[in-house]
Length: 493
Ligand code: NAI
Ligand code: MG
Image 1 (cartoon, rainbow, N blue to C red):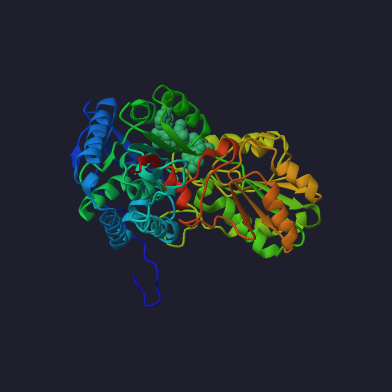
Image 2 (spheres, helix red, strand yellow):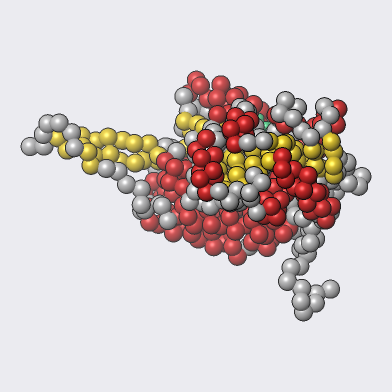
């Protein structure tokens, strides 16, 4: 019952409006007639049957995207009007943000408070940020030898295939549509099979905003079929992918015959380094948030927490206290801080690593068990006495499992922090400014947070060193991945 003081209400499970492929502005079943179930991870019950797109559907989507790119209204539209339509899409998402947040919670299992506070505002902000770029994409005039005038044009890279994961479904769509639309590209997107629903709704809102048919096409389906068809299609110019590095390796091979442009945003095993001279309470809160946020399903999760020996015991105690208070349960309850993992495969993978951690001799201080018997809920798990060579310290677990390691001094920690084939993010907690910046320079990662964690902004480039990725998303860097450079030289009279 609503009270005068209630600020956040529990939404009910929303109605699902779109389950088909979105091609050339039309909703169509998969050519094969096949469908797959998308499940509610909190109850394990099916939510809806969704079209299982495949090669034939991808082919139709690529043709629609090609037409929109080369002959449709998109190709003739002034850049400023492209930006206006993108802003309109952001406005429509904002108007519908309560329903979209609930749909995201339903399909993914994330707490409604996170969907409301993070996924929706970041999605809207990203589209508005890139809308502002649409009419500010400029070439250069270049001084060359001889009596010539040389200039460059920045042109859309073309039809882009965008393959996204399930951990932030709407936000990943916005990170990919934003720069693509600003650049004037057209899109064939494959949402993750676990979470296709919000992407399909966003496609409808894009149409309502006036983005011409064929500019955005969405083919729900599985990776090795729908995903691989996009990657191999000769009519696709670029692939933007977020997911596992092993999938990126397959995509790289499949894209080789057509030499597609590739950008990858992959996983991590990010070090979160806490020095004895830090603000301890802030560091504890940052470590907790940096790992357990989104059920631990973040590419940049601070999954190797290195704590200086002097404060190690105190740090663990404080962390265990916060873990004990973490509220797990119904993701639609606005008080809930942790929902279920996205599916059974992820649940099983995480439970396997929890077993492995125990076998390898790490100490399980909190959690370690499933919560309840329905839904993929796992207790916030804290391992201490973790050493660098344990599997739990090396592999991406992608769940609510924190590993805390000890360190003695700065030199030791730089080498250990870099001792991974990943390089997505890192954080440093210290009051010593010089030390903080020295570590920011020494650590090989695409993002370094100092005295904070998971601070994202549409303007700040994000991506990985080493096997955490190729290229950058967000910011102007992210836009450039969607542009070709054409050089034009004119002989002067
Ligand atoms: P995945 O990399 O297999 O899936 C991501 C996307 O790629 C999905 O849309 C999927 O359908 C598609 N895909 C899969 N195989 C493909 C192929 N051969 N060609 C084209 N597209 C393909 O990741 P998955 O299986 O969902 O999760 C496995 C692990 O990957 C997780 O446990 C986690 O460690 C990591 N992961 C990392 C993410 C990140 O944000 N960097 C996001 C999701 C998963
Ligand atoms: Mg996979």
